[in-house]
Image 1 (tube, rainbow, N blue to C red):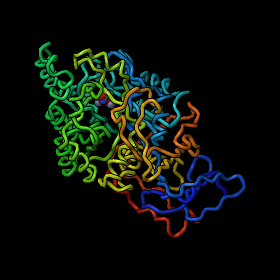
Image 2: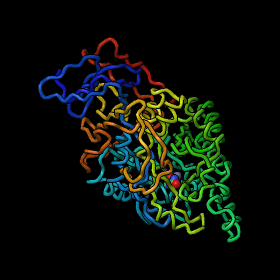
Image 3: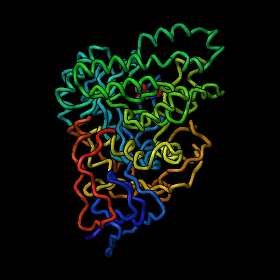
Image 4: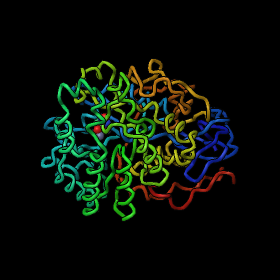
Length: 492
Ligand code: URP
Ligand code: ZN
Ligand code: ZN
């Protein structure tokens, strides 16, 4: 068999298990897995000895060049996807949010324009429903256009994004009808407004500064909203996905609902797994404001437990980068801090270092939460999300222990700071391949911007997660290559 590239001698992580061997690539696809694949004239051999070979990471929650909080998030499709590639990310899913008066179609067009000609890696969008009465009749058309995931925010009235219970209920009914999925930002708007209003005084702001951000968002703000939307999910049967879940209470609610057979899934983000709200004690604590905010150590531990237990299916980033200058817009008033953190470049390094090397998950479990589950749940499997014959050759090759310091000045992100500045992290990509092409080599981006492609989809949710595994390896496969199991573990 002829190959364009062979990834040689790595510790290859597949859905069926891990083996030491080779990945053969022909064109954009994985053509064979084996323990002794042979190069022919013209084959490029990439040595992966002593390295882990992982499926490319899918970051299914990013905001690139998003107008938000009176400014525009600082990583666009050029810098954001270059940053992602350095962290082994080969697919991003952003949120197409209608500008004032726009239809869902126009929102998708706007986001297509942001990505086209700039994106280094493959991408698609969740379509945000912000004005239910106008948008409800446009959902089917967006599904026909290749978008199968929708999003509603339970807060952000001032941005014009907020959805009420009627919209959540009605959208979930449509998700049920079409076999598609609704993503929800779950925080309780009215209680949050009240807590903010009570604390928004010059005296308290002078006294507490950025600490008012966590002080006005107790855990019940997230828990009540998750509880409510899970209820609408249960009565409609529409597939629900809770984005950026940050609390122990939310994890308990999702776990209990899943045990009752409610079609709800949840993601958390890397920041909720490695940071807690003691960061707001720092002089530059305002930099760390994101929404929802990072919580307490007990929430951090509960989220790791949720990853192990299965109620948390995915780790993403919610990348929404703001520079120091943008963050300075707060000027002492926490309600004016542009909320969001950089994340794409450090997702894999953080989860690998704190999860796998920290003894909290295995390499295979990490691969499930960063690649296979996101691909299945978002309707991109088996094209994306696994090292398997016939899948896109999207790969991240990492050294098992070599660490690099997090140094914003030498990173691809436009952020001039990092929540993890000075941390020593393993798991940056030595090599990243996207559809068979090397886009990161020796930790540096070498891929051409604009080569990323939009990914149309036909399905999403648990229904997509239960799709059959990819076909068994070819005749080139040696007996040491694990055989795919007949049925995947769903979204666990
Ligand atoms: O702080 C965040 N997360 N900014 C982006 C908007 C959102 O709620 O995801
Ligand atoms: Zn959100
Ligand atoms: Zn977000």
